[in-house]
Amino acid sequence: MPKKKTTSLFEDSLEELEQLVVQLEQGDITLEESLRSFERGVTLTRCCQKALEDAEQKVQIMIEKNGNQTLEPFTDE
Image (cartoon, rainbow, N blue to C red):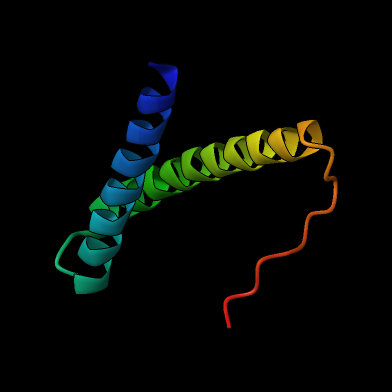
């Protein structure tokens, strides 16, 4: 169960972050609302980064358990 909760938390945070970006880009909100949205966005970004770091650590542990400790950086070409 914890896996699903973490995945859901990441996906929910990412979705909310995307909505905040759209809202900020439209520019239809006050400065105060923009600041609140920006602060919320920073919090959501940190949450997503933490979830990704945790996932990377799990992958590294699984690779090490299989005896292959060579990780190569992902390049999107």
